[in-house]
Each structure stands twice: as C-alpha cells, then as structure tokens.
Length: 559
Image (cartoon, rainbow, N blue to C red; front, side):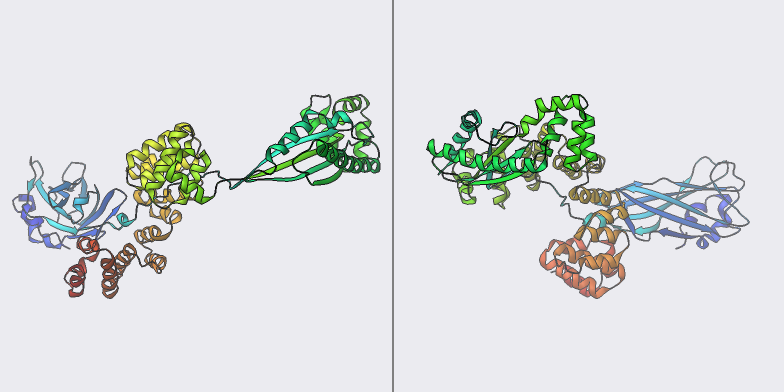
C-alpha cells in the first residue's frame, strides 16, 4: 500500500513541494490486515516506510488513525513525524537515508463498529508554521473487525448446592453392661440400668413399624488391657456370651414386641478404648503413656511398661481400666423415606409438608425450571436460613434470564454461608454476566472446582488471554479460544463431531480463514438451515468478505 493521498495535504506547504512528486513511493502497511477484537479492544499497528531524500528536513507530518463506522467514528492517538532540522521531540526521518515509522493504536470495541473502516488522516506543516493543514481524502488501512471471540456461548457453569436427602436414614441406640475386674457374670443392677431401659424403649418404638427396620443387636465384649492376654480373651468371650443370655431373658421377661437377634463379637483387650480414654483425661504423664502405646505393639510389653509407672498405674486402675470392662450394645433402625412418587405428589398438593432435604431433593426430580423455581422458593420461605435454597433459587433465576433476581438470591446465600464454593462460583458467574470481569475473577480465581476453572476460562476469553482460555475451557468454547489463538487444526478437531448450528458457523469461519470456499459454503449452509439468523450475521463477518460476491455464498445467505 502506498501513501499517495498525503500529497494532497503537502502541496500547500513550501517545504513539502519536492515530497509531493514522489509521495507514492512511501509504503504503508497495517498489521493485522483484518482488524481483530481481542478482549475489549481493537488494536492495529501501521508502518510507513520513507525512501531516502524524500521527507523534508523542515517538515512536520501528523498522521491520525480513525475508526469510522455507520453513525460515528473513533479518533485514535496521532503519530507525529519531523524532518531533521525541526527541533520538536517527534520521531525524526532522515532526509539522506529515509526511515520507517511504526505506530500502534487501540480502540474500545463497539458492536455498531463491527463493519468499521480504519483510515489514516494526514496533516502537514513546515517548521515555524502555526497550524497543520488537513486533507479532504484519507487512506484506508483496513475494513471490518473480526469478532470470533464473541461467538463463545455464555453458558457459564452455575452450581447447585446439593441436597442431603437419603432414601434410607439410620438411627442408632447404644447401651453398655459393665463388669467387675476378672468377672464375666452380668449383675442385676446392670440389667436394670437406664441404658437398658432406653434400649428397650428404642426397640418398642421402632419394632413392627411401617418404613422402619430394626437391625440385629450388635454386642461387642471387651476386657481391660491388664494381666495375661489369654485370661482377658477368655473374659471377653464369656462376657459376650453372658450378655447375650442375660439380656435375652430380660427382653423376653419385659415382653418386648420382638426378640432381637444377637450378633456377638468378643474383641479381647480394648487398647483402642484405653488410648482414647487416656488422651481425653488429665492424668499425670498421659503423654508418656501414649508414647508407650506408639512405641510398642506387643500387648504384654505395653502392659509391663505401663505397670512400671507405679504411681500412674494406680490412677489408671481407678479411673480408666474399669470403663473398659464392658459389653457394648448397639442397635440400628433403618427408616425408609418418601418415594419419588410420594415426593412428586407432595410438590403438587402440599409442598410445605416436605422436610428440608426432601424439598431440595424434589427439585432434582424435575427438568423444567418453572417447577424447580417453585420448589426452591418454598425452601426459602420454609427454611429461610438454609443457604442452599437461596443459592439454588438464584441458579434457576439466572438460567431463566432473571439476572437481577439471581444476584439478589445468591447474595442472600452468601450472607448465610460466605465460605460456600457453590455460592462463590455463582457470584463470579453473575459478575461475568454483568460484564464485570474483575469482580468475576475475584470470586473464581480462588476456587479449585472444575466449574470455577471453566468459568475462569470464559473470563480469560473475554480478556483476550487466549492461551490461558485454551487451558481452562472445553467443548465448543475451547474451539472458539483455539480459533482466536490461531490453532485452526485444533479447533477443527474439537468441532469434528459437533454439528450444532453454532459449531457449523464456527467451522465456516475457520474455513474462510483457510481459504476453503467449499467448506465455507457447506458449513454455513448447515448452520443457516438450523438457525436462519446466521444468514444475516454472516453478512457482517469480515472473515467472509472474500466470498460476499460468490454465487454459492449468496445462495446460502438468501435462503
């Protein structure tokens, strides 16, 4: 490209008279040749190369880039050039040797400027002249702005806070029967203890009840870890058997509604219980005792070492060891919750009858956002301090396009649980929807979830940081990032099995960049058949400009 139009300005300046005769020897180029949106900006660099003995020693030129579009224009930062006898601080072009000037200009992107023209406006004056003189003609550097970055869909990944609904829940009751040292007989006071009374009530309350299933009565029999191991193993075994016999008679005598099946396990010396009780106590030298347990695994060696601590051992005999001579009784009841059909029926007839976890689970049974919104709204009304209800309501509102409502709901969730990763992710997504990349980054960059990493990829894409976007995104949006990053082969591979309208449209743009007219037409045709709006959009894509006059292209966009 040559700077022929500069002559129109400079013929009126005495110092430029010689310049005008050879103005067309000044070569001007622009990079990129097709303007491209990157982040929020459209950036271009133009270079003017002046041959030797052309630029006047006393001349000053002002070159202003202007982005013109239908209905307006944006004026960029001008570049000033001076001859070697001018004493200003502009870039000097040697008269004898010539030289080159490079200038980068950046414009904020506006949607109405998509088909803009980047022009250079030239003004000139001679040394000691007050004003620059303007030309009526301009030089066109580039036409249109490639906006492939904007083809990324805005399906950021919102996160539902999960329910904790369990189809079957388990409740547990425990009791214990204590034994005297070296004895295994079950004493009457142990059978009549509050522990046993509570266990009997648990059996009565849950036996033969709808949706409730009682387990076996698990019995774990122990001995305290002192004395011979063989003796303690025998004591443990006898305590288990005697507990089974005595308690079975007791339950039968008290006319329990069922006779539980016993599952007895004799576990011998209870070193684990010993360690726990010691660690929870404030007895002297407990750290030494715990260290002995770590150092020795042999029970005989442990017993010997602890007994050597004579003063401490007397405390252990009084406060710790008696608690380990026991049979531990454990009984569970499995409670079956509502079926999916029963939950759906409640949603339809009386949603407020559902418990919190049932409500949160109920929303997962429906695919339509209207029902989900109804359910989560009920959660916020019935359980207003549950952050999950507010968070999940916000997610549904966002999916319905109600960004303000979503923002308010998720903000309430944040007030209830500021540490929730789901809430932080969703606040970042809302900020992204609002175009506030800095706010989105604040929330998303600290999270390590797959959703937050993906959403950060969308932030990077909007910032024009395509390398980072490629590392974070997947699927169609990854193909957009790869295309913006110049990796067309990678982008095509990603899209190879995606025949959606948006994927076909992107394939057509990639083909245009590769100069493959047949692929442009076939892919664009596939996109337009699925979504006719792409026909109109294609006429505003500067990447398709080489095909605007092609009959095959025209046939597609006129369908």
